[in-house]
Amino acid sequence: MRQPSFTLWLTVVLATHGLSVAADDTRPGQPGAVAAADRVACSLQPKSEEPSDPSSTSAIPRAEKFVAREHFKEDIASSAPVRISWLGATFAQRFTNKIEDDSGGASLQTFILSAASSDKEILAKLGQSHESRLADVWCALRRQPSGSNGPLEVNAKPNVFYVRDSAGELGAVDVLWGGVGWEIGASPVGDKPRWPGGTRVFSR
Image (cartoon, rainbow, N blue to C red):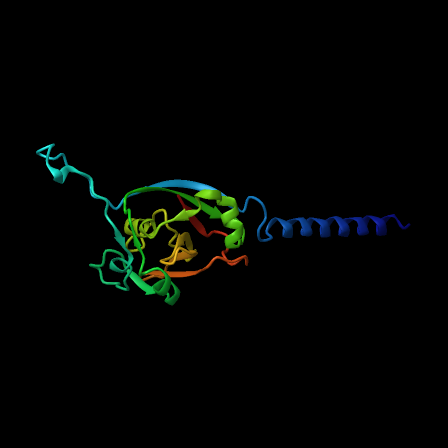
């Protein structure tokens, strides 16, 4: 007569175990939380034209510097090269004074977080190719200046780049479409799982 009670107890135990496994599947920092997606080619350089005189010095390639403050400005006018509605104070302080030596093209690898993750967990997954440049951030924004669909998420999920600031310290630059313009912030690299699932991460 006690068999039904035992069966009920076993059912409850199995159900509880199943819930525990499901909870573990969504815990922050689990292996495989950073999944590789598309690779995106991006360049700020105009297409070169064949020089009329091959011996001319004008045909010699010249490295262009990327001056951050000339590009990252709050401006939501339709004529703006990129509609930016907000620049965070930390980004303005740490990154807008930066000048990068090479503004040439890059091939950016995109990743999508399947679970909440910290910067350190993401960096460990990306390995040595985790860094990007401010020119890469700007190049990605230029592809979607008014929040159109493209490599950058425009559905209220962050887009994260790991970039060195003007002092050479690595920081997390996050780009978010706010409806009328891009919102650009920055923060120190940390170990708290603050980036939610669905966040898109870019690296070289």
